[in-house]
Image 1 (cartoon, one colour):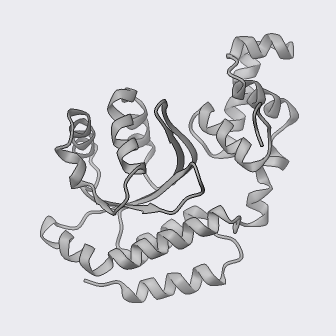
Image 2: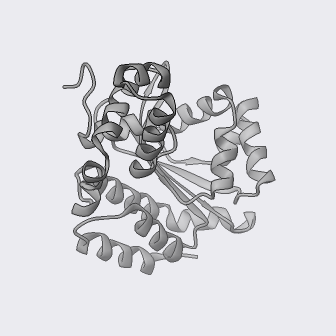
Length: 248
């Protein structure tokens, strides 16, 4: 079961596009390779934890909420292992590694989510790690054969997509959207969040209500297409929308 034709079609599309939109790329990958879901992420991995800089995926809101509800001690070991991987990892590698990984595996069965998946490590800038994860609803009997036939194509396309993101091959409207849509107050709220200030502390500094600060941060998360304040700060710094102490 090879999708070689889909690979070359996607290769042509990537090379012809002046800007690559993640969700558009994901939809084409799903159609070309019969995939259930994809996830792309770039992060800084430190002993203190995993700080996400970019995150794009096709998972449902129900699954995202379920994962967010898990405590850090459950999700952190698997995230760290995934980002630190040198070679390609099959999701089955995680199933028997730790009790925490078993919890995630059980979650995938309960929701449900396709159980077969692969994590492809991607070359990243110094100090960062990146990966592309895909998963499939294929029967277990077909999964190993599918991987043998398609791993090289999927890994190569993931690397090309990552390169387009890192080198700024995103549409002009996309790369400037954050700067044009974020208001001055939203950028101020993000800046103080980056400095470690709470909602209340930010409200005192800016002379506005705590409820208004929450409103600004909620708007910023939505406009930056992220889920948490930490991700919003990281994305805003990445795009050059705010600066933080120690930025080079």
